[in-house]
Image (cartoon, rainbow, N blue to C red; front, side, top):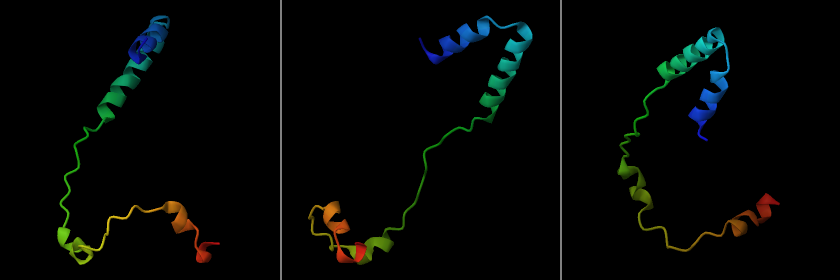
Length: 72
C-alpha cells in the first residue's frame, strides 16, 4: 500500500470538517513546494591550474593519515 492509499484510508473515516482541514493542509504544502532545478555552476578552472600534475595516482590510505604523531 502506498502513502497516498494510506492517507486515503485514514481520511476516509474522518468527519467532513476534519477531512477539510487535512485537505487545506495538503493544498498549503503543495503551494509551498518550490520547483527544484538542477544547479548551474560555472567553475573557474584557472583556480586549479596551480595543482596540475601534482597527483601521482596513489590511492590514499585514510588510516595512515590519521596515524600521525601530531594527531595522537
